[in-house]
Image (cartoon, rainbow over all chains, first blue to last red; front, side):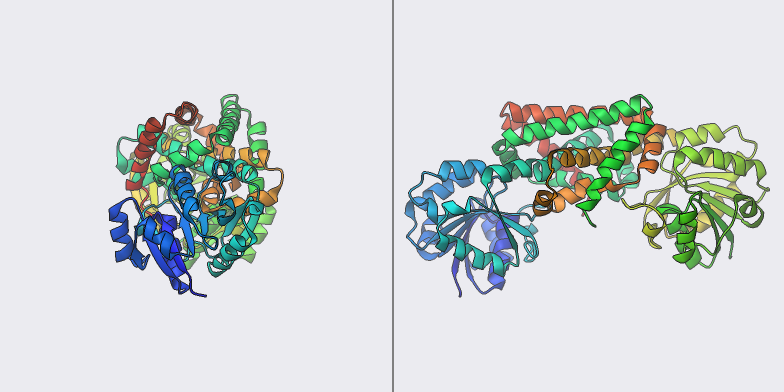
Length: 281
Length: 281
């Protein structure tokens, strides 16, 4: 069934949602605080039309919010103040505890679905949007029981069209795992970018010597500061212990190297090799 | 001109060299300390024949040494004791200072070329070999003036056939840059693997939540411990300050998060974004 879909925030995620939903014959209305994003989204056919949030509320069956998580809470709260019984608001940000906690008492909480597609690239903005971003990716729905079964059903039908694989989780649990499995990776990469830029004043050396290993570990350092400042701050409670644990492991490896303790160093590397079970390719 | 080529060490690099050189019509003789590697290399057609080092010395025009860097020095020193005037020995390990320093006084130093192809994957062993591993990759030749011009010419003709782009550098300079641009990335990744395996006892959570960002930053944790213990210890002088600098940057990011210092956090992330100039894709 063709739906009217609104998307607030037309960056990598919002723009990719637009493309994918338009490909599934939905009518897509977009809106971004940055007028350049609106212009670009129209140019790139990510949305059918750019409208105000008020008009979106009048027109749309489902509204996705894909702004930095920090601003999403207010936007969603305002949307929920004004939704009718059938409308669904879906958040697709990377942190879930705070948003679920703050929106829990809202009279229309049942119209809201807290989702997180495990999909993205290090690129940002509407130009980074790709129609297949969500294909075969996991999407986590948090605190499912706080949404109405109608809102969940409507969300699932869209996610099915995006060819996502849905996983359910509690918001607190989601944020704790994500701190280690995603947010920490970004901090590692930002720090690696800073370290290398700090020492390598001559970029030609980096060009000549950077192999695929460096690109792989440092590419997330290209990620959007606005988005990652927001995620980082919203999930600091889980992320700070993750960074501490990471620094502890780094110091242990460093000590093995300092002490010429090859045996322990190799044992730790062998243990780390177990990540093979999880990262297949 | 068809040459007889020897390869000592038939893992990822040696095996890939074998494949690529066989594709260029050279006759390739291989040898590995692990008899399973020898068997596999023959099965996978990475080499034409497995021979002893002694026979290799009788038969080959050029001998590549692609063993862990720790063992390479002795192997190369023994080879150089016995080479004739025309034979060339090429090391393709990831650290260069120690090997160049130790071999400098050798009477046949001029027959030796210290090379480092900036190519690899996180996989190891003969099964990981791929014919195109070196195509369009940089290859660094260190301390070129210590090799005879004949040895360099012979090496360059092979590297040209592998479609590599040759860069010249002093060994000490090479090792310092590599500590930051490659070796540090591996330590980051090993530490990330250990951190995540430590906290996530239930692998299903990692499966469900690990996106491309995690795979990208943690994939090097799959790398060979034997190889990376060797590289790490050989380049500890440069690698330890690199790890220290990295931990310093991590602690600064951590402090910004602890202090809710969004402004400084964003400034640091923006600075890290400059890595975009180097990592294009």
